[in-house]
Image: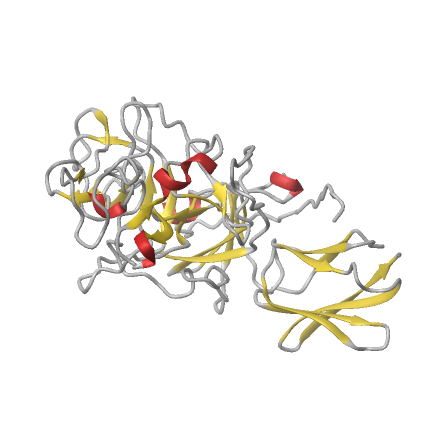
Length: 402
């Protein structure tokens, strides 16, 4: 694929609403308002934020605006994930069995990059116990921002996203740097000493303590090959040993939540090195909505009327239509579909040849996300691409030049 510098200027008509409730889960995102691109010329950061009375929908590429790479001993390449995440505006504590933070994305950073848990997806003898610590086993493949791409191209951080905020600023309360999929905020490493919002700023300390045991039940003995800390289970939650609970958070007053909220905190040591469990603990504090987690998670269908948020205000979309552009056109290899922010949600895209034969279908397309059409194997000629939703349908011609 040829490298394309994709410039797509989005014009929003911004209107202000005196009744709009622009709470932190709506306003804390790094929204790309300048068509900026990141790694491999992929649109960077969060592309669009939509919200209703109960939900926030975050559309993102999973590519940050800062420079990433290289990744030693990692053959994977970051790619546009076209994620649409759903964050509840009314998170609640889970009073039932705690929900384990799964492999893959467990939350999303404020710039649309994925949050992964502490594990690398492998365990001792593949037995599902003594799960390997991603920081120990994969840390060599982390870039300077402490992230790396998964086999599916999903760039992510298991640990402190040091390029997202100033993790050396110990004088100020850290900002919100993401949201877990139970709807509670993730903060950087520093907070008020006291949960009521008083006291000096301090670095939040994990309450997981490295075990002093030299043997592991059904696992290898502690040795130079398997040192203490190389497995997640080497860390034992010890209530009161740190500032945070078993989920790596606490209920406290923060600058964005003066009445208090449950919040997770990134954990690092005095030298700014990541400390287990790094971000969210082995389990969530709250109830997790469906659609975000799992191998196919992160492609939520929006089925309700929403308002678009921009950092300069809100744009009320009262009568959404279908508007899109195809770039480049004519095309030699890949065509990119860009929808106007005011377009309808959950569109179906279909590519036809000049004889009316259906060649490709893309389901659940969302506005402000860049979608690609691989046309490398098609002969030169005229093609038609349609976007449709219910009774609405718009078609554009695409010319394949060679």
